[in-house]
Length: 389
Ligand code: SAH
Ligand code: SF4
Image (tube, rainbow, N blue to C red; front, side, top):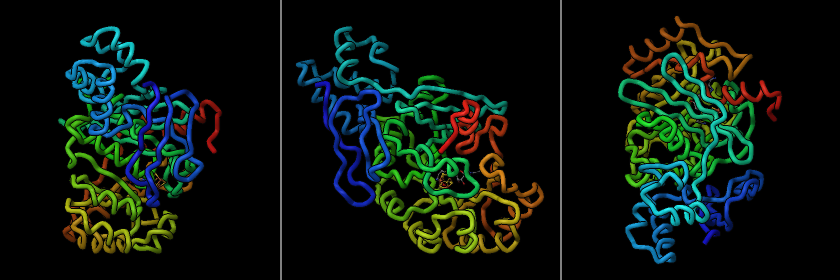
């Protein structure tokens, strides 16, 4: 039973059939996916939504003629009481642990670099099995610990202010590579497991919907990481088919829209995706979300931070009842752009608030540790002289 077949998700975003593949995981073994260019690792037990993992483990236990309660013990070690490898699951007999190692091996993300900021923020750079690198950031705040996860290696969308956008698209992540970022943090820092997850790391989550769909189930399910849907936020520039798919899920996951400009014309200048999914269409697709949505708005000097921009943003935020997160531009993403001054940021935020819009200026957490999207990878790669394509 070392080789098995599994599907990544229900449908791919183009509406095609589930992508199915066979085979045990071996280093360097990759298959093309969706675009014919991107590559993914062969699925493992940690790539399955909890309900599918349960079926899979129960079937495995049956074929081994083991008592049924073993399935529960095994499942427990996937997400709720995770172990790095089966060897550590000492409640199981040694022979069973060896069989599990051979046949249901647990994948890992290998930690290449960790940076700890003086404000408590931790940043992780994970090296994937094929050499790709992705980032996660753990941001403590009171009783909350928010983990910012990546959904793709690189990003195809080329927003002009974003370090990940500058890398271009490398590949989609698998469900484990996404949800596993939270698993790895919990394994490495017991007692510091994430209470909240935001899809605001590298990549556009709604362009990797099948894997993000499964990762959401893992993060949210009580048999997975058990993080409440209201504590999980998917951030998108507005990929409409993906927004529809997310809205179609019964759980109330939260949606953040990376708006960054209040008109089509302004947005086009900094976000090429506006040509494909324009602002009106994105806002229309956002209306079906039952929970309050958030607009993300990076303030860039002279590009989107005038009083007029603020007034136009007020209209959009009011019409959706959206909360506005104002982010000072992190300079690393865009050497040719300047962050708005502190005064301008305050003026912009006040103008929104004076017109009844709830606006929060996000502190730039972990500025001393390159904690903005794509920063750490760029820094590590450039030190190595590897260069980014
Ligand atoms: N692709 C998705 C999710 C990942 S980006 C999206 O764009 O929503 C997550 C957030 O990081 C976005 O809101 C983006 O605007 C922000 N970001 C990217 N580059 C930044 C920079 N240089 N300074 C501040 N925030 C940045
Ligand atoms: Fe991609 Fe989001 Fe960065 Fe734009 S801001 S390039 S969509 S990761």
